[in-house]
Image (cartoon, rainbow, N blue to C red; front, side):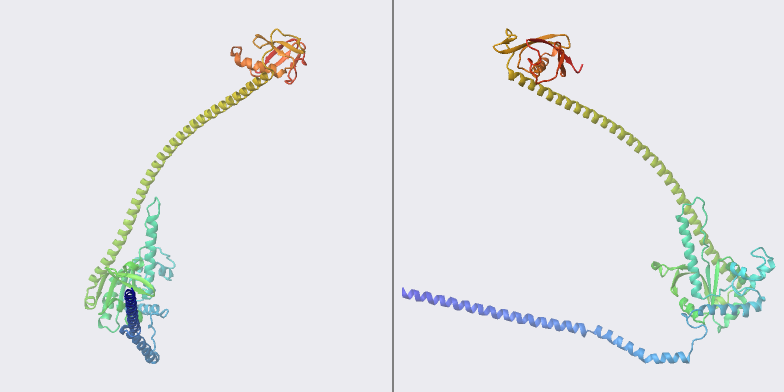
Length: 524
């Protein structure tokens, strides 16, 4: 036994030592895992820090910022010195107020004095012929738009400069504003419901003729003298300008405004002439397939080129050919405008016709709906009346039933009360007894009913008038052949009086030993 116990203790010790060894190994493994995870986290933190602060893209961007700042610092004095060495000329600077207009006015003055006056003589008009400067002219103040002599009119058309005296940006802006007003008038016209079909009130925007002049180019002077300022071209341009079909803008490439236009239109040879249509630029079509998007002084416009010619091809063209190209381009534009207005009027007429048809249909539909509503209302009214009638009949029937029920209850109560009263005094006394017997008085009463019938009954003298009435109530209930008498009154002949006191005894009322009582139907 001792040996076995010792062996058991040895086994327990071995198990305990194994358990301790296993727990020690698990603790060591957990420490190793934590050490590995900590080392990995440190590596990740270092990697993220390196990526954040030492990445090539970040370093490159920082370097660019530093270089940009250094270049600004270095070249700022050079910029200031250039302003003193090369000051701005009269027509330099696009952002300077009035510079573009001054350049345009100088160009108009140059064309008029250096070419038109030398070729065709003087005129009172230095700018383009229009309705406004016709009224401003002293020579036209007396005529006030009336018909003039054909020779004077012809003279005016060939001795007036057709170019506008406003800068390119202002010219583009005026055309876009007119285009927007014209489009708005079309929108208002198409959305109106007028019965009279009239074209839109605002005129369509004119075409823009752009001429870029290179003063040092050898072909520029001959082109202006022989083509642009020829009698045929001048007359045509001024006529179109007068009728608001064309705006002519010209500029020298030695000015900031002209240089900007030359750069925008990618002009590489001179002279340059183009006819373009100016439209307000929408965000969705900033680069049109048929034109070029442009923005001047925050004025966004889309230029659609109808005619463009430059360089030797333009300088060598015959005047009649140039006139044909320009007139066809302008006529094409006018036809497109007329077709657009015609489409608008046709669309408006179709819309008006459709609206009239819709209105007639809606009126017929409303009339049918009105009749249907009236019919439904009439049916509802009849149903309401029928329902009210039925409800009234039900109400009357219920009231009648209620009255009958109450009357029956009242009658039942009356009968029960009559039975109770008769029960208190017992049955009818013996018919052989009359007068007084054994100290008790009796009364023989003859009742005269409303139908003439007579009935008799004996009562004790101590019984009351209510007992007599209870007898009659039960008698009328049991004998329906007499007629239904519910409310009645009793009266005696002798002594003559009405028996209304229900508590009065028969002997006190003088009805003993015999009496005649008249029964009066109060409901008769």
